[in-house]
Image 1 (cartoon, rainbow, N blue to C red):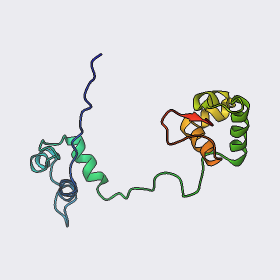
Image 2 (image 1 turned 135 degrees about the horizontal axis):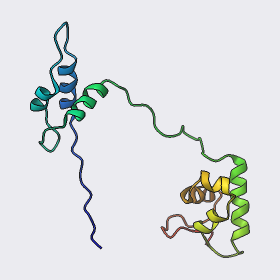
Image 3 (image 1 turned 90 degrees about the vertical axis):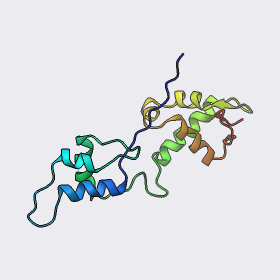
Image 4 (image 1 turned 30 degrees about the horizontal axis):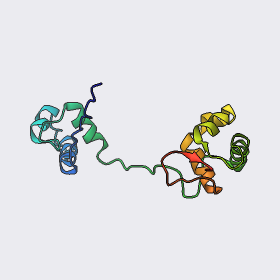
Length: 143
């Protein structure tokens, strides 16, 4: 089996992106510079010339503000009722005094809940309830 090395993507730094924006949106009544001419002036982080679509994207998105990502603090994907179902399934699958793999717990969940959450969420919800050695990577719950 041949393992391919992941290709690094070279992007433009902030100064070059700003130059793309400034040359495409000049002040006053001046005409915007053509993409081919801008291409000769700007560089990517690895020193190569960027493509025309990359220059256009940099000029268009320079002033856009990035939105917030993720959930708000304290907000969970699962409801309290779904957490109860998860815990009930965990107790049903796990024999007393034994550990169980998160895969088994996840597979035993109702299909709707199974599609909504992943195995990692199963681990987190059970950890919140105090089950499992979660410093281990083995994904064993309740051991």
